Each structure stands twice: as structure tokens, then as C-alpha cells.
Length: 283
Image (cartoon, rainbow, N blue to C red; front, side, top):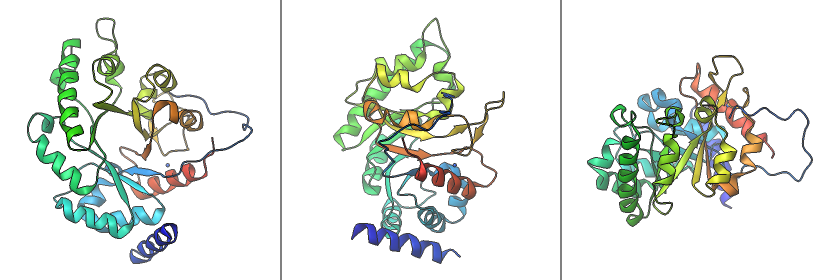
């Protein structure tokens, strides 16, 4: 009955409003096959549309077929109203991005808002420049993350961190990302691995899954073009081997998969083609 309800809601939404650097396998692999059971999208991809018409944008996302969304701000909407819109469209919002600054001031308020919307995770998407220049800065961040994670856990929410590529640039012979993983408590801090940025940094996500099993509760599914610029492209049109990565999801701990493109030429076409690729992907 839930499946039928979601099909009806998505059809109604569509009527209402008129897509590391691991190489792809050259030879199809033999079964057995697995598929993603739910696909999400990071709403930063459609941020301008969200700002212009919040409800209609979420309706379009639902009509494409997405099951989950990850917020990058509520665009001045009250959290209870956000929750009502999600429920009406049959969408879940297991995660949201929140700024580093709120970990230092306003964290309890943000946790309360996240509980209202129904988030299971709150993710810090980046770090201010002042802490990036030294290993001591990253160790300070790890302490802040542990404190934020402890308060989040008490509220029934997991706290996590989303990477770019700067965390993989060595400082004094060490990798800052490795410091963040080593010096945060696995019971308090999880990680959201951005598959484009780790590929941009020329690091292998599979090695991180093997070394730190269970630490990665979600991924940003972003693809990379094959040119020397290594630019962002729609999911399925680039070079990242998502099938091989997703096949390690249980070891990694991955429970959620969020499509994202930072600056697509056509945001809705980008999320549509990315969804279609992932919906047909077997691994």
C-alpha cells in the first residue's frame, strides 16, 4: 500500500507542475545483481529554484522519482512547514547540511529544528579557512566535532562531516582527513564521502572503506569528466565507477546516496538524468 501511495503522490506531483576517478569496467560483470533501494538528492543542486518556489521544487523532485532529499537550508521556512510539505509529497529528509559556525553558536536550536523536520543526520559541509592551514587546526576541529556529536546523539541525531579535496592535501607529512577520522569518536561522528572531491584529490574511496569500515553513513554521488580539468558532470556521464563503490556499501556503512552537481547548466535536467542512470545501475 505504501508503494501504491508513493506512486500516486509522485504522479500527482508531476501533474501539478505541467546525473576516485576509478575507471568503468569494460566488460559487464556476471550476476547476482543489486540495486539502490532508494535514491536521494542534495537540494543545493536546485538551490535557486528552491529559493524561488520551495514547494513546487520539491514536487518536481518527487515527480522525477527521488525518495529522499538532503537540505542545504530551509529558505526561511518554519521546520514544521518543511515537514508538512515533505509528508504531502511522500519524501523523506534523512539529512541536512549545517554550517560550521552553528556548532559553536546555536547548535541546540539547529538540533531541535532537525528533529522537527525528521533528520537522522546533520552534516557539516566544509571548514573555515582559519583551521585549514595546520594539523593543530584539524585537531581542534576534531574536538569540536566530538562535542557536537555528543550533543547530537543525545537529541537522537548523528553528526557528520562532508569532505572536499583540501582535506587530502598533505600537511607536515600527514593527511588532514585521516586526522579527522582518527581523532573523532566513531560513536559520535560519521562521515559523508563526496565521491567527486575524493576523486579530484586522486584518492581511492575503497581504501578508506577498508581502513575505516562503518564510518561512512552516506555519499554524495557526483561524477567527474575525463578531461584534464577533471570537472563535475551529471552522474553517469563521467569516469567514476559507481558500481564498484556501491558494491562496498555495507563495509563502508553507507545508508544514503545523494545526487549532487554544484553548478549544472540545467539543474532539473541534471537531477533527472542522474536519477535515471542510478535507477538503472546494477552492481
